[in-house]
Length: 111
Length: 116
Image (cartoon, rainbow over all chains, first blue to last red; front, side):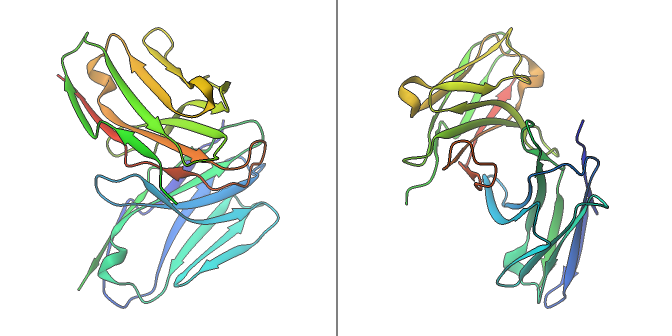
């Protein structure tokens, strides 16, 4: 059974810092890994999707990497801004299994 | 493009009552999902539809939860009777390409259910 763990559970950084969020998963037989952002009281917004054959994806100040063999992914946020404050969720898609989510990392960027 | 629409936004009911949630996916999206998100947890899949057929309902508590997607577009999720532990946010999501595992999911804003 796939399990997804996100560390840390919460993170507070000053504006302008670069930061890394971590995600680990137990079953390396995945089709893709997705990073989502969730603002309070809102649904999830897809940030990046990395297919199993890819090593990384970039969108603006965000870069996500995938190491299937070690069961790990990282989300790198460059030059953080207060508007980046949200909960970031990692989710993995297996073969015949549904998308499995971690519990998320709650990020606060302090101006 | 209009996003995934859900209603109501909030619902408060007493235990043993029934409740229904509605979802309208993005136009043209064949796959529709209902997720349950308990406070402090990641979303958990309840049911997945492809067009109007059920693909996965293995985590749906079928003694009290039911869902349908008539005509392969809108969907409703019902709970009857509700329990205290059903208090959660119910999220609907849709994705474009049937049979593809690499379509990103688009989520609605969810319905926050409180059972007292």
